Image (cartoon, rainbow, N blue to C red):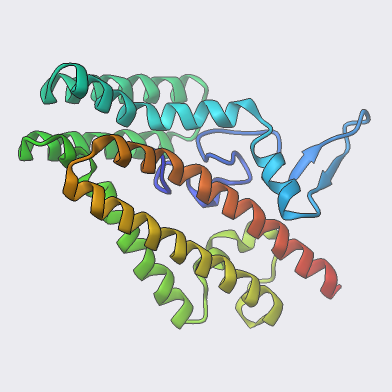
Length: 240
């Protein structure tokens, strides 16, 4: 499943998917024959750089494979074979990440999430139960983002300030706080839409749409993080 649990924003400098090391952060890439690194100057450049590394796409596939396999096997067979297949796929993904010496924490969290989803599906006896816990995540994220905005510490600033090179008291910098306020507000909007979609289709028991929603979530937030990093760095540069 691709979401912020499996694609930690704090690991963006290592990989846009948070599943392993990368030679660049989302706002930086090597683009000259002399091996120099140039920071992305626009949000669009940051998006292209974020997804220019094939390994990032591989990581997305590894993260989303269990839910996609679950849906496919459930359609072809039944619930319990689907649960077993999803568990086996998650275990294979865990092995892949460890063999490639990627973040053990991220790998274990991803495996644990799939295990919890499988248990819920088994207990409820319904395929849609596999997506119950992930469907609740957008609601929690909206509340968390709103709380950090009220506290004048927008969530993206708490997660990304060290990456962008901002000062410890970034929340007192009007420019940086504005960047992170917009980014965190965008995260709220995305999660509101996500929550609405998942609520509707969970109620209908449409596991295909639920799987697609989870597949899209991670790349969307990795892209938001990359654009936010660029905006924050440009703000800091303009203040120097």
